[in-house]
Amino acid sequence: MPAMVGALAAAVYAATAARAPQFGDGLEFVAAAAVRGVPHPTGYPLLTSLLAPFARGEGAYFRSTLVCALVAALAAAFVCRLVARAIEDDSSEDATGRLLRRWLPPAVGLAAAFSASLWSAATQVEVYGLNALLLVTGLLALAPCRVASPSRLAIGGVVLGIGVCNHLTSLCLAPLLGWRLLEAMRACAGSRRWALAAAAVGGALVGVLPLALIPLRAAANPPINWGAAHTLEGFVWVLSGGDYKHGQFLQARPGTAFTLATWLAFAWHRVVLLATGLGAELLGGVDFATGVGTRLVTGVLGAAGWALAGWGWLLRWRRDRAGALALAAPTGLQVAFLLAYNIPDASDYLLGVWVTLLPLLAVGVAAGLRGAARALDYGEDAGRARRLLVVLAAPVVLALPTNLGTANRAGSDLCAAWIERLEAAAPERAVVLTHGDYDTYALWYAQFAEGRRRDLLVVGGNFLRSAWYGPMLEAAGLDGREVRPEPGDVFAARFTAVDHVEMLRRAAIEPNIGRVPVMTTWIPAEWRNPLAPLLAGHYEAEARAVLLAPEEVEAMAAWYPSLAPPLLMELLPRAGDSRP
Image: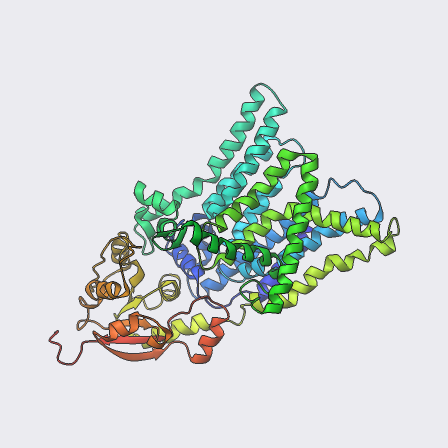
């Protein structure tokens, strides 16, 4: 059954995978993989290593997406096996028990495969599908079944270590590994105890070895090289989350720590997200479940899911209290992280919550269906027990059509059009100012993955206060152009939009204007963008290209929480300016 679930998921993922680049972090991951660079913290050496063989040349994004699709399909297959492991203690031999042991695992595996989070992670380049695979693998290795052997503890340690190389939320498996180790050590004596500890710790140390790729790659001075990680300080900065931990972890806003009042309001929104998110996995995802009716339905479904998981936990608690706490720890730590991390795309982190919740949810669902079968007096009547198949199939049947619109990226080419229009309009050797992830990463992908318009100097305005950015620009090739970064506190509370524009002028515009073309991606002032009117107050701004038409902006708004700038402008000296 797991193989069939994985094969079906892989086929659907391949059919709906993005054929063209998609705005987002995936562009940076592919570009960094192409140049053996270091992307944004935490460096992601595992993902970029997996993508590296496929990340150069035309179509690099599509090939890399297929890698992510395969990883997500494996995660769905492993979910099937994990559910079978979770309910294997059920000793009931009546028709209902046999039916559940046979059909509940593939039903949950397919529901997970076509859930909004996993399906969406499989059709673009992202880190979350790989994170799900590693979490499920760790749960398979460490979930209670029998006394853990050295090999099982070693596998659990390796998976935990590799998971840390991919995403720090994989640390949520550490309490489960620790509990399984202590449980095994209590069951044996003498030197064997130390053999078990050596297996777990040694496995974890082997698992984190890919982290060594970060300083090795940084030392080669690639054109994507966050944090100068070839130094100990830079390496620690990258691994610990870089500026994100200062601007978003336990922060009401960048540079402003939570107070009790601000955190309570923030936490309430997160609780609502968690309460509705499980139901929204079957109804298009939380970002698309915006109507009152849809929110009500997702809330009811989500509450039912949490209740069933709680029931499963209570059943586990009655048999083994320590084991129940250890199984709940991964989900609890994921939830705690969501309650502390103030990130706009928090819904992406829900996948880790649902994956770690699965062992308890599966036990609760099985218990609920057995109770329903007893209430309906199905007993040994296999024909009547088969009616439960309708209940098992319902989530899959519901998720397939509703999440298709959320996850299908096969025809999405807005990012590709944006890149092509900018490249066609930008003069040779232009300095192109960008102002966020969407425009910066898109041009990095075009230059470093597909090798297009390497003559352009892309200057990320949001990086100019970072100490590592100057050497990275030099590695990309200044070719006679000049950029003067101004390192400082990235999240300084008093650094206003006026200060930012003045920095752009000093760092990138004034050293180049009048010598080479100076372009900027542009969000119109009527969109309440403060940079546009401030820059226009100093320079003439001449339109070069419409990068996204109004109807494309509207279509894009359904996919992305923020928009790539829809215009390309050239900044020119004002009339009478004495520049050469």
